[in-house]
Length: 419
Image (cartoon, rainbow, N blue to C red; front, side):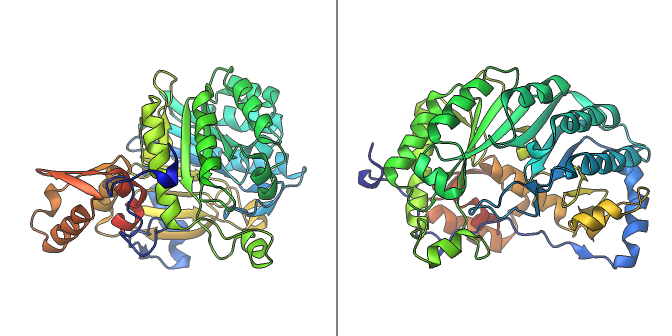
């Protein structure tokens, strides 16, 4: 199959359905809270954080380098941060656990960043064990750590698994060595393949992330990326469209003629359609809009799916975001302020109350992430009905009584639909 020469139906790819693809989910209409009320309101609700089952997110905001395609860079990695930061996060976790009064269980833990695997092995192990000590983890809790090949050798991965991690997500982006080099990746595509094979021999679910729409990423390169990924013994695969935000370092290279412009949405829509068709043909199951699991290899993608629902998410570490008890919040993103903050307070940089439609919007967001929507709540809503008819006419979805099912073209454009 040659991507550009293949006839794609509008159910598979619809590059002209919207002027552009929305990059991120909108923030669902929270109600502002005066800063001087943040601590008292958060403390008032903290004991109720686990009245129901939830999730836990830990942010490790360090990177050894600023990848030119990434918008999540916050702090340059320094070796002395490892113990200091880990101590502070464990203290934060210990303090909050003393406040909880509910009987809810944590069904997924996620270490994100930044680069969580930049932490020293002993500190990663300490933090993982602290989660098992202070969080009420469900028996089948999914425990994920994000990482990159640099700073995360097989022995370090083994130590994390022995401490309790059962899922590892590795940012590969592409297996093309030349593009990897331009993106700031130190390892070649061949080395990335060898690494994933070795990682897959460990007792954990292994997931790889790929990006489509990168500069110089031709049809042939993307097809090869998918071909290589499906040949590996990994459990899960994420495919993400490259979002070229104006503030990304990659734009300086483009402006100076060192890189071509990234692919437009017309190409991205075809690359997404190709990947979906190819992966399904190879037996992979599409478990969310961007995530695929190979049967019987243990992949659940639990955190990434449930975090888009109404399930509470407890947040720890500088820059982490969470919600519970009708509040959404962000832990202080300024590293020094976070490290210097009192241990008996939640170091916050943002707090808001949920809007009146938050519960409904959470249902919509979660359902659409899984590719469907129950339209019963909108039966008397003329505006919603008009939108559904428009999207159906564009072949983004199909309707069966009170159910809507997204086509492949709709799944790529789901952020536009939710907007």
